[in-house]
Length: 253
Image: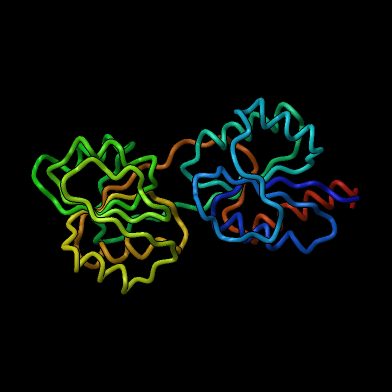
């Protein structure tokens, strides 16, 4: 029996998980992307792009496509999508697993200021002019227009259109992973004194956190949102093991 699997993706972990499952005859895998990145990298399985229309829309899709396994491998800050996935799985009885990267732990010499969101990050930057590295997605940049006194360095995968409505902003187009020494050079060359980021976990973007620690630079870090309680693993390997255990139970092994 072949099981139809839907992976909610948009992360490196999701792509790696899809690669691991793609060659297995037990599974027919579809990877779902939100469609926010204009030029996503290639994937080894069919890709569905765009939203589902909330939990109800996702539940309908699961039923229509006869999905038997739903894997939430979205970004740790995609709280709404994760909530919709948990609700849709409960409505349909589809098995769900979550692949959730653990957050970066605070280390000695980290100068972290934890905030709830972009508005709180703007407040934490203060009123005096600073040189700020914004390592955020396009959706979180708008609130920084309320603080035009700062100079901003903004790195993103896709162009920021329209540009941020501030007088001093520099844009870099780049896709991780980012090496530590390159991150140090970026912060030094641009005289950055504050980094604003999410605690995404993993290794691909950790370089900026380590670089800021080494240079004594403040990091204003978004707290992780609360996510629904579903069976979860924190690595691709552990997720594969959970899937294999579920598959064995389905076969009555």
